[in-house]
Image 1 (cartoon, rainbow, N blue to C red):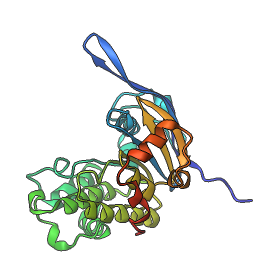
Image 2: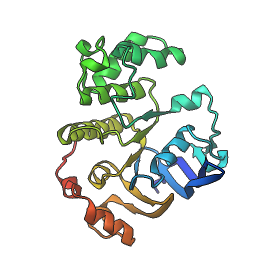
Image 3: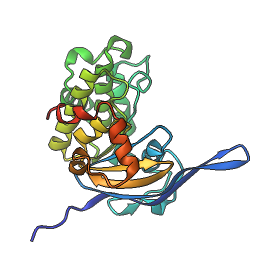
Length: 262
């Protein structure tokens, strides 16, 4: 009998609120899901639905009860120790804003290695660049000397250089041209296979989510309205009326079949 895949990430009844004036705004309300080891879980929804806040809570970037986020079965406090930080890494939406403009690619990749006292840093930097399709000629360039796609590759390399087991991806292709989006998605799919990475991928684009993810949660107003396998989404067999509206409204959804495999 084959064993069931173990869960890498568990989000259990997550609530996140923010102070606004004299009151509070409930950004996330009772969100729960499980991501198995090696799987890619997608969260899709309109702007303001709470999807990025969920990702921030998993990363420890916003306060959340430790019982609401478990990694490999361990409750994760908001204040993480170095080993927890190294276990999961974050790729931000904007490759133009997420890289220090006055640091070379080498320095950008070297800094996390120094923080975590990793040895053989030169080899680790060279390997991370090669993994994302960048050569030695990119190593000592500044971000402004790179294209948008190259910058996002550097951001992914920075996340990979510590050999994490989890990647948190916050709309990593939304600021890129469509042709470059496909390249980055195929890169992420390849890295997932080669490194057995577990990922949570946030996007507003159903085509992007359908290309990369195994299971998808649809969020609205801070809540998950439906969780479904990607095959069900592709077939247009969503149970929620809101999900069906998203499918109908997504102009690029038909591209999901045409983006190709890595």
